[in-house]
Image 1 (cartoon, rainbow, N blue to C red):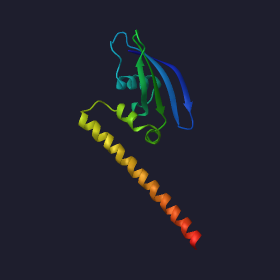
Image 2 (image 1 turned 60 degrees about the vertical axis):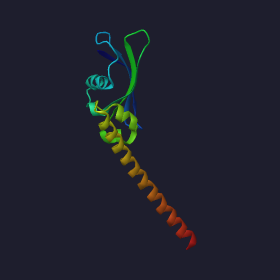
Image 3 (image 1 turned 90 degrees about the vertical axis):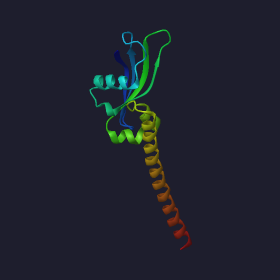
Image 4 (image 1 turned 60 degrees about the horizontal axis):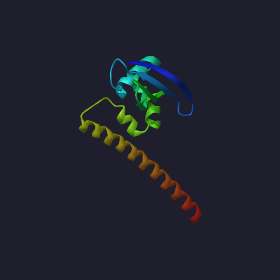
Length: 135
């Protein structure tokens, strides 16, 4: 499997590199897994594998070349803030189906906790406004 980066742009707002790549998988056979592509991209970019996430990867019809997009983040905190839950689950190492569900549930729990905090803060702001209007 040979990987080559076709384009790389830095997005300062999201603190990540947005990468388009091609994988020549003539010798290995089928399309490589996301995990294999992540490992190769991390090696080419000289980054930690936990900061590289493959968003999409498809094989061109009739060829043994896969084209994909990936994001390489500056920090793990930025990954948690920006990257979608389903992308994190897809890029996780292969596990038993039960463990994948557990990972998805944990991510949902953290998201719901964050949403509750936002709702509580907005409710407090509304109460303050009502108190100021009535007083």
